Image (tube, one colour):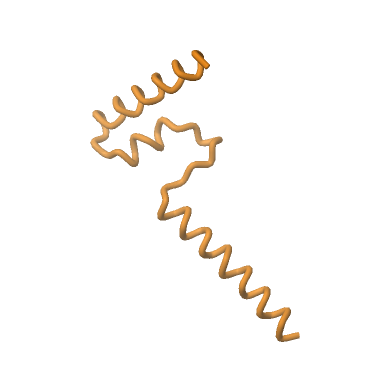
Length: 66
């Protein structure tokens, strides 16, 4: 648990330093967060889930019509 707390403290510190350099919270956050975690901004996440849902609905409508 202590190791996790140290990691989180370092991550928060790095995000704050990145913000001071970039003056943009979104850029700072995503420049520090590892890409392998798959984080995306909320607007991008909601757009991709809408596309996924609309694609699923289209498939359902097609199967109902056949």
